[in-house]
Length: 190
Image 1 (cartoon, one colour):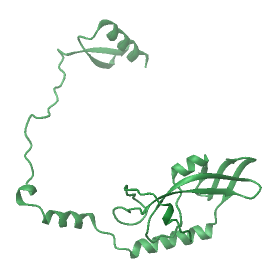
Image 2 (image 1 turned 135 degrees about the vertical axis):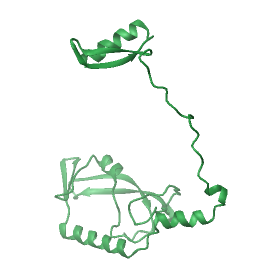
Image 3 (image 1 turned 30 degrees about the vertical axis):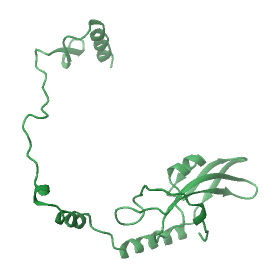
Image 4 (image 1 turned 90 degrees about the horizontal axis):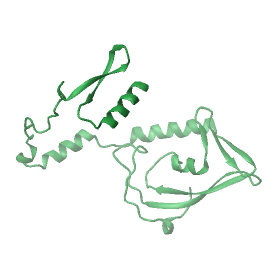
């Protein structure tokens, strides 16, 4: 975008995913910039936080859901439209279908030519550094996390529809009588 914002960057340590092929992109930092949509007579400006990264992409900036929510914008991807409230009524922004296609084609070309590390290759590389004891698969100890199933002694059937025994459920016995009555009423009402 031909902006020198290096002095404005604040540190950030959380990576983001899904923009370039590979595991993650580590941002150089983040910056808050004013973003304006509209014309001289009818416009809207909001301050948007951008993560700045140093990688090749066909886009200069990507507006995510937080930015669209801040503008209260509604998008229609098929028609390349963005609508939002403005000071003098609705602002409608139309995208350029040809430019959008060119950006997509360029993004596909970048993705096809970049070398993304294979997750399987990364696992294999890490496993080479482990000791034989670290590679052992732990045994499953029987009975450690068994769930005790309710028996007929622990529960009683409740008809969900009075007179229809095919629609029943089980509730625990020993509930507080008021709680049991409220639970049965709730189950039979829904």
